[in-house]
Length: 476
Ligand code: GDG
Image (cartoon, protein in one colour):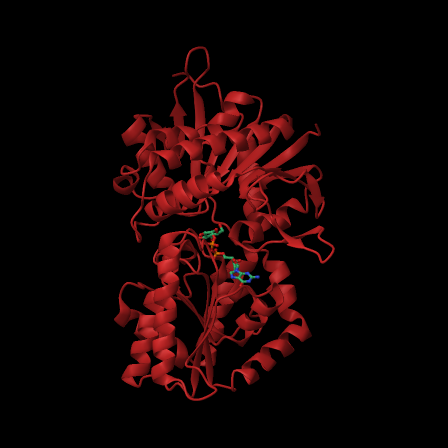
């Protein structure tokens, strides 16, 4: 078995299978927050591996290489997908960690599957990590992996990054098996969060539920038996994007031409307002549509002059809350178009599909305003991608205070998306903003995103992990 110095462990491998006409499989890079973030980091590592699920239930494909990375597929049965992925991960943890915007559901069979699948991932990672290697575990689906991995391979340096919010203690305390989850995470040497607030929420839960003490960001985990006490660091590492790659694409004359063509095809409206989200109830799409519908109804927006484009990427389509959301969003879009569109010209141009990266960049460039109205979001990369796509320094970002990105992107128009009146005022302000003001804000936003890219994020995390892993022998 080959041994790797850096092993990434995530629910999904960074590729999707596509069937060729001759029946063979072709692997293509898959979209999504984590993948977007990690692909550029792994490119710069010599002996890197990625352990994850290949995306279809049943037997896992053999390990293969893609983009200079060795990929190790982990098997998930159809039942694992239903219980571990759609169940405990996306119908229990996801809503609970996002402020219970939807009701979390819990079943003991889901927890059992979650534990078993986490064991499988830990075993797969333990099998391919070189002695003393660094293993970087990602996200809420794999919170038990750090401690399982530590038990199997105490020689490893283990990092964990939580891409989604960590909830306040009062909410986390509702989670059945909460202490197992905390102990699972505490197997890591370093636990990274998007926002300082997430790290503080975690520290509070550890203190309240396990009674462990911490000094600032360092938690002392008491030793068991002959094992010494350990220090675990929990702090914020706000994720970013590959700003350089996005910026380069944005300078491509073909993309700039595509943006112009797009505006023309949209009927040359005076203003184009864009939303791009996974179709997820955390993203505040319903609130955004409500505000938009009211603005049209009030006559504050003329549908002949201003067009909204909403890209809603299909997501978790077998989870009930997501099916319901799709129905509600599409009903609302249909109503708004029924009331305000004219023949051949919608009031909202709605796409329920994924666009390729170049088309996304052209869309960002065609957008006078981008609306990020998440009710809760770990970071939100769309906000950062929009800013990096605007070398012309024009365009306005309306950004929810409840997205992690709001901690950094202070020059955006920050909103509380729960307040529909405030949202409406923010949209109107964005539409009316003079170019000079747009430029001043966009310059500040761009400095933030260009100076803090995903490579910097990964280096900061891995750098800290290197020193965190050493601070082990502390007295109890
Ligand atoms: C999780 C956290 C955190 C979307 N539609 C298309 C497409 N996308 C790309 C975007 C962006 C990514 O997917 C979405 O990232 P977000 O950050 O907005 O949201 P999540 O998927 O919920 O990600 C989030 C992130 O992890 C990273 O830590 O920021 O808070 O929830 O890159 O551009 N890409 C393409 N076509 C689409 O139609 N090509």
